[in-house]
Amino acid sequence: MPSHTFRFPSLRRLGIAGALLLLPPAIFAGEAPVRRYLYLSTPDGAQTMGRSGTGILIFAIDEGHKFVRRIEIPTFVEGMRGFTGCEKTRSIYFSTSNRRLGCFDVEKDRVVWERTYEAGCDRSSVTLDGKRVYAPTGWWYAGDDGGMLVIDAATGDLMDRIKVGLNGHNSITTLDGKHVFLGTTTTLSMFEASTGKLLKRIEDVGEYGVFPFTVDSATRFAYVCLGKHVGFDVVDLQAGKRIHRVLAGKEPIAHRTHGAALTPDETELWISDQDGKKLFIFDAAKMPPEPKGHVELSEGGHGWVCFSLDGKVAWCHTPDVFDAKTKEKVATLRDESGKPVSSSKFLEVHIQDGKVIRMGSEFGLGRAR
Image 1 (cartoon, rainbow, N blue to C red):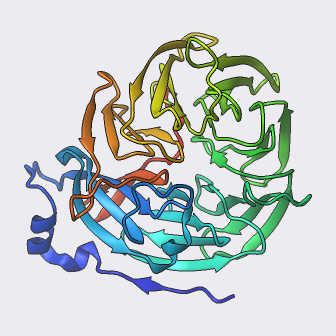
Image 2: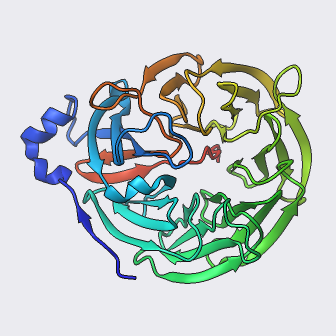
């Protein structure tokens, strides 16, 4: 299928005057300042709350998460399933409910390719070298050939299909670029990122079905959300087995858990109870992690949690923005009309003088190393 290209107004074409209208004033000390933004995709294919048109909404992190601008992308109407970035290619790779995967060039403000596939695409990940996208075939896909599609990040061409198991949901590429993880039904699989070779298959995790997970920076432990209770499994990746099951609350809470994130320094683990409108917090410096409290959310939704690269801010599937240290709500995401907006598909982007210099991840990965 031919790829399609959509063009949008570029930051460069705005010129100096236009940039000053969009961006807050800054003090220049010999070089252009670094602007930190939250790129949020809408509509979320998994929740109706917080939707605001079709495209990417950009918020200025250092200006109280003030709305900056909107980029219209018509195919987002299909509902967003994944939104992952790659510093090497300076691009964001998005997936929709219609088995579509696309590449959005952040510096050029345009979609450079889009493809649809026979299976997939759920929450994908990109290798550190920017060459491969690993796209899970989807939690909705129950075929025996479920697993991951391996896609050329430059063109969208299908390179390979890895058969793993039922309901391939989320894939994570480790920050050292060596490994890719995939969650399927009560199973966590580990692959060599450069080749797609299966290295380890860990079963009996996550309690039921397939749910989100996160991994520490040493690739020592994974934290897998539970499917029938608010809590998580701790998986020893070296031993290849589950070693702890931790439940939130004084009594077991019979809600699924959808969202787990380590603070960048790996001192805390936050998990989502979207039905209970809470994020539960655990001391991740202890093993097993011990409860530290929770924060209240303004609404329910799909469930997600992630942190800014500096670890100071926590984002989730609601419009609420939290100070990660004080646990206080410090901002509400609002679109250009002032309406609260939210999604579980977002990431952090740093731009300096029109160039992408750093990108975060939609997954709450540990960054202590």
